[in-house]
Image (tube, rainbow, N blue to C red; front, side, top):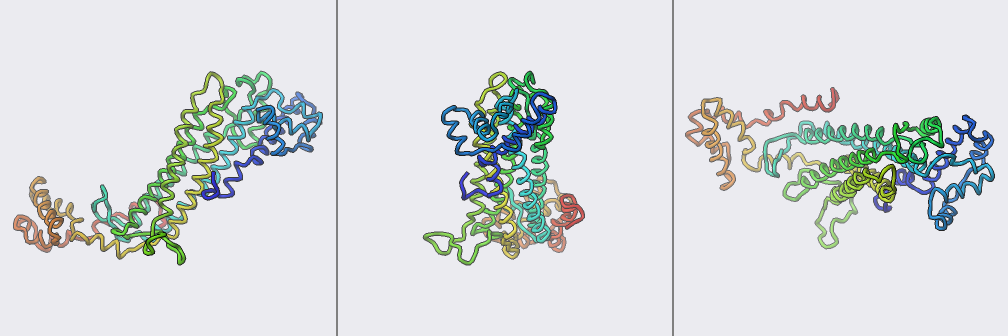
Length: 433
């Protein structure tokens, strides 16, 4: 995490202060449950809530000596609580605290990410409806294919981010489990009812089988979902970058009055935000593989996953949080140039209607192979000579023998390509739009 790409609300989840506060709550809630079961005195549990506190600097000081962060924490906690602190952490092991805390942090982070996705979805929906029928060039392999609308382009991204939200909701449920099962997960020294109590208090579900650690397939799935969401961010960012290219100029990032595009060339308006999003997406995706490699731990538990998660937990969530909000801002302020979109559609003299001519010739009795040949030979002249496709077709005796000039002209109708936009919009947005 670096401040440049960090939003305060998400960063706060991953501070030492926040982490130790969660540790304290886990330990105190566990102590409450043990007191109800008669394992520890109720007065001790009450004293921990009353006197319990910690100091990050002091924990770090102790850890430098004992080389164990949970012991450093409980030692510092005892300095505030006093004699009753001997009941803290009864029958528990470090992973009970660490894994349950990570689950809490990830669920809180996910709630922020879900709100981020809502902002992205709202921005895309608004612009999609705004440009529902704005003609735009559809491209395949980067080459003009057939007309679409800019709103239809955006509707596709809306559907993609709606799927992203659904996946993230599932990932949240997957990651939100609590383990208070003691060494190697047998509950030998801590009653399962303690786990159930802590889980309820911390907003988590009980982990069905923990082997001292929560199974890491859960975390692998979670970070994989973040990686897929980052890829969706990159896909939309890449589209905007392409549309802003000088030769295209169909859409562009907002450029403020005092903004500078280049230290050397005053004319430049560079797509820096979407380029930045492309890079940030790579950072989020790179956390997925280490998370998957964390699944295979030795026997019931080792800590080879620990150092990885201390980094990828904050890095992935903080980076994706920043990226989603930056993307929402880009879409909200996106400059759209309908005239340029139409000019690009017209740039190749009507070539974008070639498939409709092909189909009409086949319906007029020409074999598909011959129809393709007739259309292509005229289309290639447009590429090579800059001629007008419609004029060439009308002048081609093999084409005019099957289709009249009026019939050919009717094939160059934009409305033919947009007639089902309403149907697609209803699929994506319902009756709205």
